[in-house]
Image 1 (tube, one colour):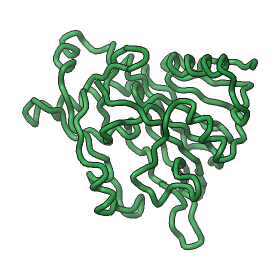
Image 2: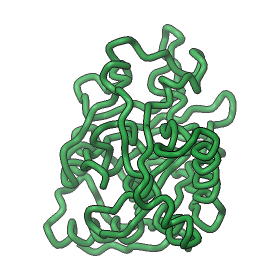
Image 3: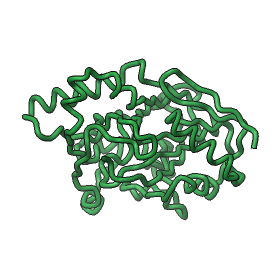
Length: 282
């Protein structure tokens, strides 16, 4: 298949133009897409027209798919798809997880086996605003002073889903039930992880789900976590994605974070997300 891969920024990200993901990809085409994802960390597939089933089929080329702790927002009949939406139902409730991604984070970094990547499909977007920003955690790590790298290379951190830390009001998202909380207990992951495919090192802490860095006193741990997270989102590491209708964006949660800016008042942002299961960080 003939298609183009165009870099979107000097930090990370590329757009894929001329590829129809509703059709099965041959092995050569898939290999090129897979390599582009490893090279650019974020791929933007333009002008896709996908049914939920087609979205799932493409996503599964990269691995098994997971559900989400907010299971009330999974798409009926398609438990692999999370509805990310600020649209309201007839009852006045949100149609999906309206406040998803409002802090810098890596998807499912609070899980024992975090996500490989997420594929977010834009079904309805506001006329302006509602951008998503991505950062390059390889480059953030590589730009650290040697002394900082030496200090953090063997450290671990505790992770817990941001919702359990009461970051959100009940107007933004419903509180987790006892059963949902029990399904996402605190876990430990390395502060610096090695990407299982590229073998490059990347920072792996984030403001939303990292509770604390272990092995240091509280004040030092808090200061270090703030230093690392603020450093990692400096402009030279960040790509801002301005959504187009029917974009499918696929990012690598093993080596980048993202944050979603809220859409303007009285505008809708309605999307479907699949999440590919990853591996235990090391």
